[in-house]
Structure formats: C-alpha cells, structure tokens
Amino acid sequence: MTTSPAPGTTRSNPSNGRPRVVIIGSGFGGLFAAQALRRADVDITLIGKTSHHLFQPLLYQVATGILSEGEIAPSTREIVRRHENTRVVLGEVTDIDLAARTVTSTVLGRVAVYEYDELIVAAGAGQSYFGNDRFAEFAPGMKSIDDALELRGRIFGAFELAELATDQAEIDRLMTFVVVGAGPTGVEMAGQIAELAHRTLRRDFRRIDPTTARIVLLDAAPYVLPSFGDKLGGRARRQLNEIGVEVQLGAMVTDVDADGLEVKDADGQVRRIPAATKIWAAGVQASPLARMLGEQSGAEVDRAGRVAVLPDLTLPGHPEVHVVGDMMSLDKLPGVAQVAIQGGRYAATAIKRRLAGKAPQGPFKYFDKGSMATISRFSAVADLGKLKFSGFIAWLMWLVVHLFYIVGFKSRITTVLHWAVSFLGRGRSQRVATQQQIFGRLALEHLPPTFEASKTGGPKDIPIGEDATGRQSA
Image 1 (cartoon, rainbow, N blue to C red):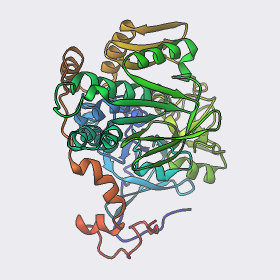
Image 2: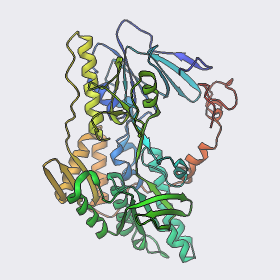
Image 3: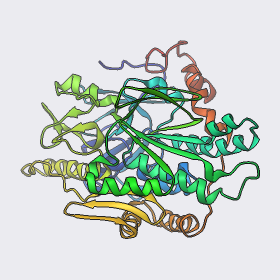
Image 4: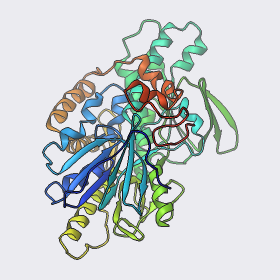
C-alpha cells in the first residue's frame, strides 16, 4: 500500500549525485547511525517524529520531578549541527514504498516524500496494552515526554486533591498509586514514587500524611525483574518492600477505569484496587512501520509487531533497507538501548562498505554490556553477565553509565546537580504540574484530524474526516 500525492505534498531531497540515506527515527538507533555516517560521502535525511532525541531510560525521573524534560531530550538539530551531510526534518512516517524507494511523512497537514538509495528504519516501539487499548485513557504508559509530564501532573495532583478531600475512602483512593509491570521501568517508577511520598513530600501537607501513601507494583509474572534472574530479582523485591512498595506477583490486570483497576490473581479470584493514579509499564509494541515492511518484503512479523530481519539486519530481497532497534526481530535480542545503538552503527558500516565496493561485513553480533535498574536512593541491581551487583555499588555504576550516554555536556552537568538535590537532599527540582499536562493528551484525541492543519496555517482543502495523507480518521 502506498500513499498517493495529496494536498500539501512536497517531494524533498533531490539527488545531487551522492547516495541518499534516509534514517527514520531520532532515537538511539537512528542517532548513532547518523553519527557513524557523519564523514561518509552521502546525503542524510533524518526524519524524526519529534524534534528531540529522547533518553528514554530516565523518563521516570521526569515523571517524578527529579529531572526536567530538557535534560533527557536535547534537540536533535543541536546534536547533529556539525554534521554537514545531515538534514533533520520533522514528520511522522506514514508510508514506506520499497518498490519505489520512497518514504512519506506528514506533520500538521503537510506531506513530504523522500527518495532513498539506502534506508535505515529505527522507529522504535510504543506501549502495548495487550489488546486492551482502552486502558490507556486511565493508565498512561512511559514512552514519551508527553507521557512523563502527564504522569507528573497525575502523581503530584493526587496529593493535592487528597489534601482537599474530606472522605477517608476518597483520600485512600487518591493516595494509592499502582504501577503495572515489574520490569526495570516499573521497578524504578514504583521506587521513586515511594521516595517521593516518604521523603520529599513528607512535611509539605497539613491534613494528609504523604508517608501513608500506598504504592502497589503489579505483574502477571512470578518474578520481579525476570530478565535479571532469581537472585537479583529477589534482592530487588526485598528492597522494594523495605521502602514501602507492595509487590503483587501473579496478578493480571483485567480492567482499568478512572477509579481503580480489577486484578485476577493466580488462583482465579478477581479483586479490585481503588486507585486514582495508574501507570502502565508492561509490554511494548513495535512501530506499525515494521508490519508495513513485513507485508511488502514477505518477512514474518511476530506478536509484538517486530519484523524478522536477515543476519545483516536487512529485509529479504532488499539489501538497501536496514531495520534496527525495537522494530526488528533477530535471535531473541532484548529491547534495550544497546541493541539499537550497536544496530545503528552496524547498519552505517554496512552502507559505507557497500558504497566503497568492499565485501560485506559478517552477521550482526550483539555485545551484551549488561543490564541495570535502580530501586531507590543508593540502591540498584546490575547484571553484567558473570558479575552481579546490588546495593550502593550497583547504584554508583548505574549513575556513571547513564551519565555517559546522556548527550551533551550541559545536560550532564545539570543532571548531576539535580541528582544531588534529590539523592543527597529531599527536594525535587521539577514539581510543576498543570492541567494541560494531565488532560492535554485526552483532549487532543477528541479533536478531528483537520484541527492541526487548520490551526497552524496548513492546507485548507483537506476533506473533513481525513488528514493530508488521505487516511480516514478513527
């Protein structure tokens, strides 16, 4: 399926004789691929759905007021400003035509088509609700800056509303926070909400006691941090219990609404947890572009929406198309940043070798540098293969590694300062929460597709009910 020209469509990146490389996605895979190609004799077009590069592992710290969004999401243009062969464009890719070698993107009613000689697809993954997308209205995920800011508003707002409430049942509901998913994101989120309630907000209210807040971590699996193994997972669970997090395993969420959620336990019993704030940190779904690539190339697509790639990260019959990161399925590789980083660099090397007439490199081999997760202040777990650490040493290792991968000297300095405020003291430097943050996502979902174009000077001849690409609105 391809997208035909529509009002507002423009053809971009005309050929000037040099090979055209189009990179979809400004995450780890796309950014590191662009950096690896910065001195290559090619013209690069980097298409990003947002204008920033997101350091997703620290989103939970934006949601809990430790860091600002700017510290973990520097401008993509600023990062690549010295890459003379790279052009950054804003847009959401809606179509890839493998036969015509074109990529179509749209933003605010404006459609652009980019031709390519080499394509790197690194569009990442979004939150998966396992077929229950209606849960998203009441339990935001943790995949974007918008998600983190909405959760910040919901978390801090819950304490504010509890201070105003007079009914004890309502106070209890407002001061109950449920995190669904006991992987690294869920564990880190639950731990920081506990620290927020027990340390930061402890003396800030007069009618309520924030230390009585109930923080629940749910997962249908029988273990916390299952990818870390029983030993480290057990230590993480004990530490969570010590800081006041209720860990409930073998608990499957069956329904979510504004007032709480229903949980089915391993014995089949269904119970309800009244809670105003629910956070979804369970499951991911690859970008829809992966399925599109699978349909056109004949490659298989798994249940998580990832497209199967060849050992060199290309699609069957399309050696010019490289798929990296969370979108691709190969040897059961984990959905972590290092897979995307190494995949992006590998794809860039493959392109440079082919353009230079050199023999192809060997199959992609992922070097596992280990996994880390923080639990609370001064406590973390680290799995480095045969070496496993927990406690303060693991926490220091976590700090160093995350500082290393944060892009930009300025961001590293301000991050260290904010960490000092939060970890050595009791404060949180980012406690602003607005109604726009909390309700903006829901409000936008109720607007017709023509709203964006009409309010930003976009094409005026788009039929009602369609956007500029001709797709019908939901």
